[in-house]
Amino acid sequence: MEVRMFNDIAWAMAPAQGQGAQGGGASTIMSFLPLILIFVVFYFLLIRPQQKKAKEHQKMLEALKRGDKVITSGGVYAVIEAVGTTTVTLKIAENVKVKFGKAYIAAVRPASEED
Image 1 (cartoon, one colour):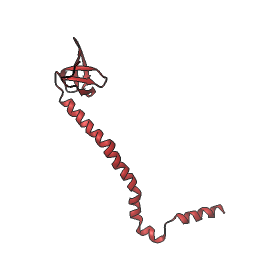
Image 2: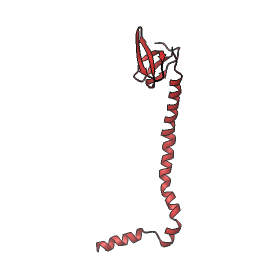
Image 3: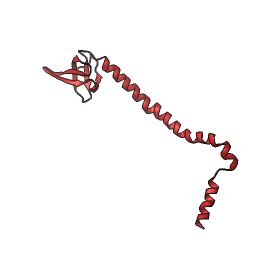
Image 4: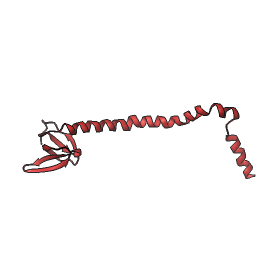
């Protein structure tokens, strides 16, 4: 009895003979449409803005020069003393210089901003 019940359900769920051959391609595309739409939304809301922000940060790091006032990702306010290829020497107080990785410079402060 139980086997027959599951067999009936399987037959009821199977597509009709004519529909299976003709509508197979369209139904496959329609079933992937929500996944495609979700990917497009994620791309425009998450991936693209993050890539844009990374490019802007890279441009800012390439434009660093001696005398710029900066803020590190750790929150240290400093003035650039020397710029290397991957490091920056920062002056954080009188006679106190610290070497940081360029990637840890979070922002360049305006020259008019007070210390």
